[in-house]
Structure formats: C-alpha cells, structure tokens
Length: 125
Image (cartoon, rainbow, N blue to C red; front, side):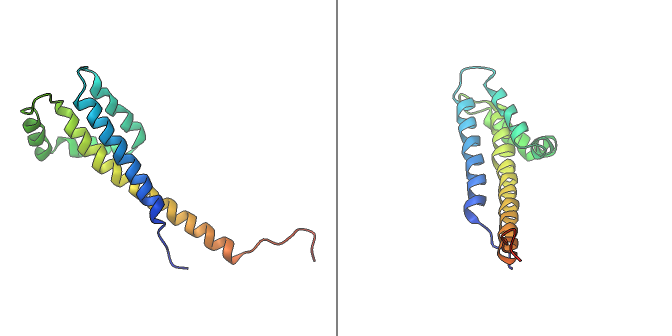
C-alpha cells in the first residue's frame, strides 16, 4: 500500500503550534512586564529536543543577531522576542509538522495492517 499523508493531521499539528507561537509573541511584545519573555521557556518543553538545539545553534547566527539589533529600534520592543518567534515559531512549527507527518504515516500503516488481517471470531473452527 502506498503511503498516503493524512493532511489534516499534519496541517493541524503545525497550525496549532504556529498559532500558539504567534499568541506568545503578541503577549510578550505588548506586555509591560519585564518578565513576559519567560513565556517562551514553555516552548523548550513543547519543542523538546529541537527547541534547545535550534536555540543553541540558530539563535547565535549573525543574521539573527542583526535582526535582533534592528528589532531594538522599534518602539515597545522585546529584543529576544523576535529570536524566539523565529526559533520556536518557524523551527518548532516544522518540528510539529514532522511529528504530524510521522503520526499520519503510523496511522496509515495501522489501517493497512487492519485491512490485510481481518479479525476472526474466537471459538470458530
């Protein structure tokens, strides 16, 4: 049986994650609380282990540093906020897209095995 992607699962996982990241970005961006940025730490758990790996590698690139420097020029800025949105909003969303893809693959394999091996009633000869 050919691998058929259940697009609803894949798109749902990625969309929900991206929506949560956008909401977190907006909360931190428009908050007056100096500790609002700690909200992003929840994404380290949500995107484990990719979140930490992406933060350690991508977060230190010159392109990201230049973007953060530019972001500080915008009124009501939260400098690390744009870095977190890129790392968790983009990389984390791709991670959850892959999780949805893997889940849809597993579901299609389970359905294929059930179609091939129908259940028999116990006690029949």
